[in-house]
Length: 268
Ligand SMILES: C[S@@+](CC[C@H](N)C(=O)[O-])C[C@H]1O[C@@H](n2cnc3c(N)ncnc32)[C@H](O)[C@@H]1O
Image 1 (cartoon, rainbow, N blue to C red):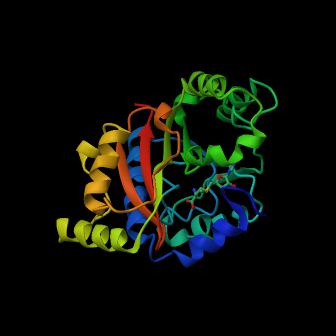
Image 2 (image 1 turned 45 degrees about the horizontal axis):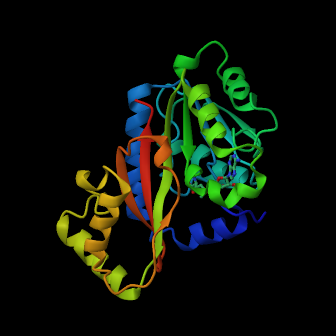
């Protein structure tokens, strides 16, 4: 029930943060929905969905989806995800997909018992249709550091297995890029600036293209927005640059003091 990246603490935080997370949720839901529109999967496999707090109801259910597979070790996630996403029939009056849960933390290449478990799972789940199957990592890969104790192999080998096993599939990941505990002045400055920059207040939390190229440029951009020259807190790197180019990035105020920067990466 209490895990380093999920469990009770995360559910409590998410319920408290429902309003605060709204702009980020709206933004990342658009990314997920657009990506699903582009790959049109009949089968979607999601790793680490929790209750899908970061997504609007319906985001995981594109038209034409026949099967949704969810890999999530947190037992509380299943009933809450169903309440939030599957029973939200008013969003999707068409036929509901068949939903399968795998309550396991041992399917990722970092934590699996055998080196082949990740590839075997994907190939078994997708049957003879890898081109109709899409795989989404939902806020999990930037949290791996918290699970280091459960790693079963060298991280570089795990990354290689990850990349090789995913070759036949369209895949995408939403993950933490970096994070920071904010000083009060930093938060105030950033909020007012982002809202002022986008008077329509449509998608105020999206980072501009120049901040996507690499972490150095991004932190330079963030520090300028935060006016954080006097802040003692340092950035935490969530070690996700290996996933490939960041296609989009968003600010996520986990709570009033904690800023996460989320990145979205896709296989093509
Ligand atoms: C930060 S939460 C993800 C946020 C979530 N997608 C949302 O929309 O609110 C990370 C999730 O990854 C799950 N997790 C941790 N290790 C995992 C593993 N090895 N395989 C699959 N899920 C895992 C945790 O239980 C947790 O629910």
